[in-house]
Image (tube, rainbow, N blue to C red):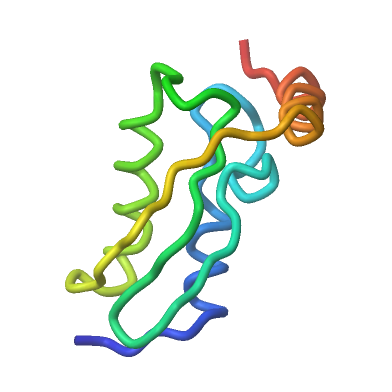
Length: 100
């Protein structure tokens, strides 16, 4: 197993782009409180609403980005819903970066 640093994890996650918005999930506030320890990465997936249709897809692309660093990495994701302020910021950036 390859050893990775917090910086490696942060860099990998900062490249995970939202499929419909020209911003990364980190920039949109969707990924937060990232912690890397040994072979485990944990973070909060902070969604505008818990049941958004692309939730499973977002989890998949995040896990792919992390397993590109180390195929044996353990990924722990806690789901949360954005508060109103976070959702307002997300919507502002989403409108600015909307691809369609």
